[in-house]
Amino acid sequence: EQPPRDDDLAERIELGETPEAFEAQCMYLEERRQIRVAAEKLRLERRREGEVVELMRFEERTQRRIEEIVAAEAKRIRDARNEVEKQAERLAVRARLAYARGGLAAQRWLRARVVWEEASAVAERRA
Image 1 (tube, rainbow, N blue to C red):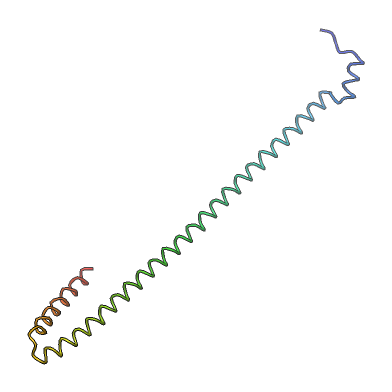
Image 2: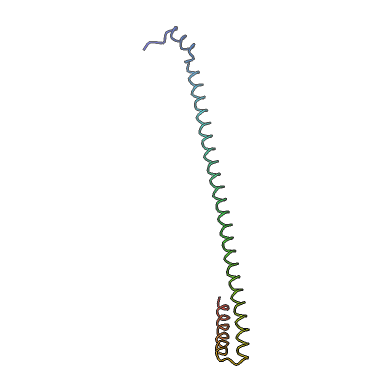
């Protein structure tokens, strides 16, 4: 193998093809690669954080909706119970009036009502 000629070496130096230039270029390319890798990691981390925030918002919206549904159902149950109690009270008044007038059907109804109220009380105590 013969050593490089001086004019060949001079031409390579002019073109920047020296070992130091190659080393500098390699270091520059490695630094650029590391910057791209770091930027990609940062982008992925931010995307994951965004996904987590979006999931938390979705969970909060879902929780609020569930609470609204539960509150609406509780109100519906309370309203229905109040309406049943009002109707029962009106029927009890009518039964007492009929009982006072001596009606046999009213006496039967009043006995059934007392049994129903006792059964309801027992069921509420169990619940």
